[in-house]
Length: 343
Picture 1 (spheres, one colour):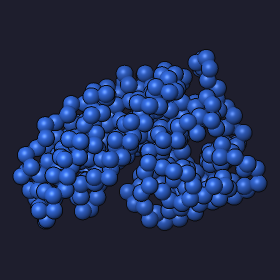
Picture 2 (cartoon, helix red, strand yellow; picture 1 turned 30 degrees about the horizontal axis):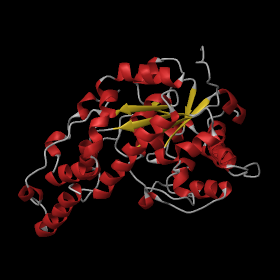
Picture 3 (cartoon, one colour; picture 1 turned 90 degrees about the vertical axis):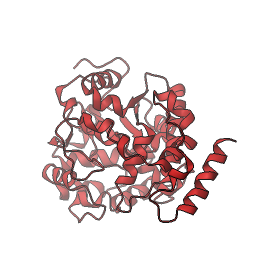
Picture 4 (cartoon, helix red, strand yellow; picture 1 turned 45 degrees about the horizontal axis):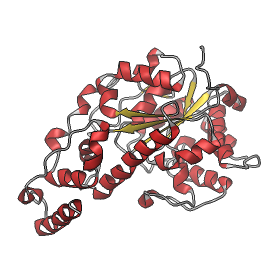
């Protein structure tokens, strides 16, 4: 492969964006590329750090030492199933099956234990990928000849720190129509509750997308719309390959987990697909609730045009409470949203 000028094998790729925006799909499309090593789950590294965040509800710990963060991630319910333990997080059977087929859990576990050489946060992140290589039957030194990919939603607020650790890093920020995100977040929970805080997180995520793109420049930071990814994966992944400085390999159109086919993580759990499901781009329209329209308009409405999304009209107030157990409370909260939006 002829590598793009300015890139080197160990310049990593970080994928970010709000939840339900296509970060997983995009990362799965990168997974099988011969020049890349994709970690099969989210490391959530910054959620364990003792630094301020725009997303306090996502915090998992408040640690400062890289070794302590490594140990916390290894002990977490997110990573332990990769070491052969039971999964308490759920909805990851397909991913875990692929990992267990490809990765020697005993070797992976042993490779994660020695922490003597961890002197920085950069070392800590490299440590996870070096251990994964060993679990895959490869040498840890292969990390010098391959670029790793890590995906964690909402780490867009940390890109400047990641850039200090990895000066040549590339960042891909997935965005999706905020109305669609609201519907998807509601559907993925058993209670089916509209999550206002997630819509507020959308506001921060989209603001970070614009600011990071301006400050880092188009050679380092790329914003990709979920709708473009699923409606025209050929063109979108070709552009992504050019941005990342990798060959436009056919595998970039086939989502995988460590090389095994991946069937998707639709909020409709019975939905599976091969390749990229174009139908998911607009299937939110028939499920959108008036409350979600109101909340999106309040918190994200002014940002939507920046990403090519149309803002829907405000719904009549008497429609907002329909279908809720406590309509008076819903109406009071809705009225507060309207008043705040007019300030």
